[in-house]
Length: 332
Ligand code: FES
Image (cartoon, rainbow, N blue to C red):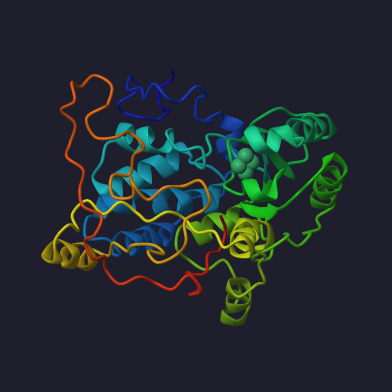
């Protein structure tokens, strides 16, 4: 465990930070300073929240957009503006992996090595990039072009194996495509992500995450927002279910056993999904309202004293037709 350098609470530890914040003189000498403009933008972020301290996460992204990591100077700025101790700011900054403890390269390349991506070659990709760049996890190539990290599930398992650059997706990679991608980044190119907004760089996306546009003008910003995205692999299961006439079983409706309960459930925004849809073969509706396959009274550890079964005849709230489109989602 390590204390946050520069902190007045120098002995404070989070228990979570296995690597110290980089405060070496060489690093600090090279950093662009946090300016009055940075401080004004931090206050702009704070003004968005009823409780100013809620602004800490985007403020840390703002610091990274200027200095490429959460520097000791950035910790101080956040603490001063929010009335927190540096240890409190450090505890947050060291909890989340998106906050970096040493200066990040121009691009952050994240390789998913979690289960599905790994089965499909994620670790081989990581090993190949590591060899090409001459760095390990969380290290930056000597030319400053790329910081490499392995990541735990980038929430795009249906596109496995995935690599992100500055959090933009490059789907269904293999060793060679990932090597070409990183080689292009090192040449100063910006290959277009598989889906979504164009690639910028780590500081640019950090500015976006702080809640400011990273784009030069409104047109470029609108084009990034409206950039094409693909949902092919994501929707394969939905299409298969449609073909087979299958639907998800009804949601348990614990508080909807009376008409007033039903109204209350509906008022709370609870929808009964596809109540009229056919059950998949082999699935009984006998347990539909319990949300369990264990008959009442037979739960382990009970003596036949389980909860009484609720009637399944209670009317449900209005349902959304199966064919109704759900809300469009961006990244997984
Ligand atoms: S396992 Fe790689 S994105 Fe989920």
